[in-house]
Image (cartoon, rainbow, N blue to C red; front, side, top):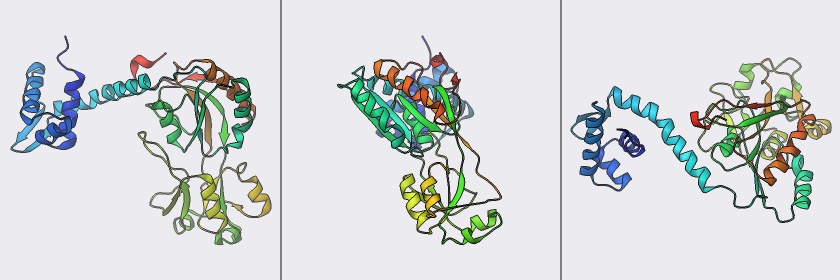
Length: 313
């Protein structure tokens, strides 16, 4: 029998986050004496001291910090497993897809129509996420399949298929001062202007941003449509895929301007959990796999070596 349990790790983690035994007891719906006894019992079993006690002030020892550092991923793994168990689709034809906001819904409209015709009783949900929010939806079992962009976060366990890449150009309104400049826009010029960005919708994964300089003023919006509206009105500047704003550029509503520091390309991924299965999943996996030609890159399936040790296929 192990000397350390998940409950013990949770108690120690709660004490650290609340700062005292009494606050931890309140958070865990226990008495302070029960928490104190439990900690003493854990320390006795492990033969280490986990906390420095200085009156009401509680701080972790080096051993306590090490325990939480190594045990934190175990707690996260168990929570992740609980979420997955609770959210197993009850209908084989049910499918949940998360689509990054850089891809218009039109990208999948015909596929959705075809799936409804193929499975008249099917339930389907298509949620829009941004940046790491799409990966977060897969990690936390809010989606069965995702179309995401950017680097795959280390903690996400998934199978992936590269669909292509997104290139970006700096866009402004014709009325914006950048539009009249013939030479490349410098970093200092960008720092003196506000950049319009789409907010990362991640719940738990680290949020990230694209095309932002350190200390730059930001105007944060929730989707591409809002970003386009502001840029066309001459408010700030922002990076966008030229394929996404082809109409706006051809109509002269937006102008693509040269920049001395170009934003890098973003890779496009189709991703799913290795354990995903079912008729609905199989149909969508096959359909979205065929979209590799749409994104101008042949796909290659790889297994993402990440996540928790026992989850690796």
